[in-house]
Image (cartoon, rainbow, N blue to C red; front, side, top):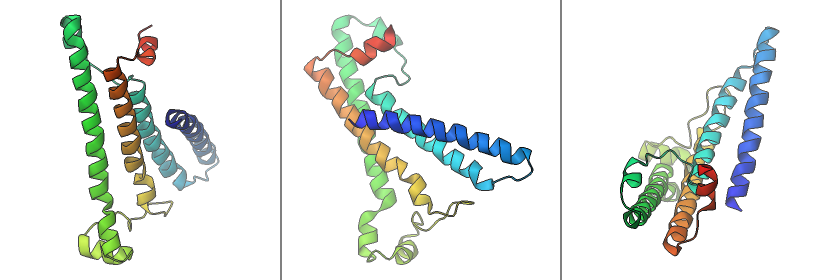
Length: 177
């Protein structure tokens, strides 16, 4: 289900980016540039790349150098692949931890949900910094990080569980053919 939502978001973001770039070209051609379009396009691209990375983890289509795995006997390959899945899951958990530190929800609670007091006490301006032309808080743009940290963790743990259970990897086989 999560993978399906991510793929739908990727399609929507790709369409939005295409339309935003087209809007930008047309408005610049008639000497009426809309400057926030550039910024929104960049943010849509960031979201698309991050969500795409999560999809790639689940489908095991991320960039991999398989030279070592291909060189060892088959009986050694499975433990190596399990170790890789563990490293990916550990990385994903690190992303969650980093996002938790970055967003500092406990600090926000301690500041009584007063974001100005939180920023003044912690020098963490994540909730206060606006985007350049759109004017919304950048925290909404950066929200992709904890979201993707959660989905990558979910996908990495699912991949590890499948590998440990010896479930075939149809996604990996499809990619190979």
